[in-house]
Length: 304
Ligand SMILES: Nc1ncnc2c1ncn2[C@@H]1O[C@H](COP(=O)(O)OP(=O)(O)O)[C@@H](O)[C@H]1O
Ligand SMILES: O=P(O)(O)OC[C@H]1O[C@](O)(COP(=O)(O)O)[C@@H](O)[C@@H]1O
Image 1 (tube, helix red, strand yellow):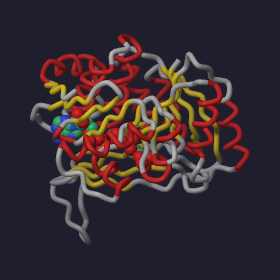
Image 2 (cartoon, protein in one colour):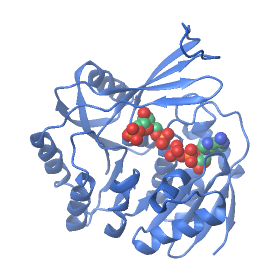
Image 3 (cartoon, rainbow, N blue to C red):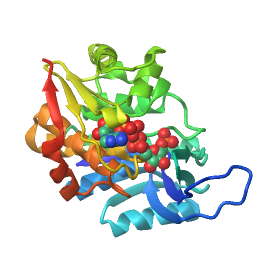
Image 4 (cartoon, rainbow, N blue to C red):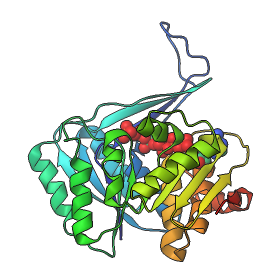
């Protein structure tokens, strides 16, 4: 079974204001509410692609209730650890540009941290664990490392989609997949990733340091996959970009959905990139049909 961990989930509140005027009254054109957070998006896309998963993480308050009901209505299995303070609301402002305002998230006590670790300790090597998103403010910076140690002990393959120090610490722990975007990759090495060659050069460093599969996503410029056997560039077609929130999470879900069925990293990469772009071209997340339709238009260049 695939388990996704979202320590700091959200309600994603999408607000469309065509010409935002700062310091004035603005009336919205449209509002939408989605369950959010990186692991939750991975579980939602997996479900759409026909793969079951279990959502782990923290939920609390009226916003946590919304989150749980939304996932249950999509037939996604949830095993949240309940917390007292409400789950955060992240604002996704759509207009001439996309602007995101992500909340801090609730406090997670030591006891609740232990409770989640206990759940993870019951998984085994036939499972896959996806660690995705930022850490809530009260969770120690090495919390993902603690989870990854459990995975190492129990031989559970794990995927990491986070950034900064919590990503860096996990690379030597041999994650099965990491998926930084080009900004996050640049941040790790204090450089700007401006070209495909840069993405390959620095992605390769992460693979040499321990990550088995590295996917560097580059928004509308596609993505690169680097593993011990291959370096591959995927080019994506131009399209009508409606929403890039969750595009990266869709890439992870698309890769996993294909990989667990075919064990072919290049095929899985193409499928993941198709899922990312299909989400970018949709209002919410991609669907199985949109991913399959786009798949032949994802052009691969195999470098090695
Ligand atoms: N403007 C776009 N046009 C086409 N595809 C896109 C666009 N933006 C994102 N994508 C797709 O989504 C994937 C992930 O996007 P990216 O923005 O790099 O990740 P993240 O959401 O993690 O920041 C890309 O590799 C690509 O497949
Ligand atoms: O945990 P973070 O880094 O604050 O990110 C949470 C946000 O990222 C998302 O999961 C979207 O992520 P991506 O656009 O990177 O795929 C939103 O649903 C959520 O609001």
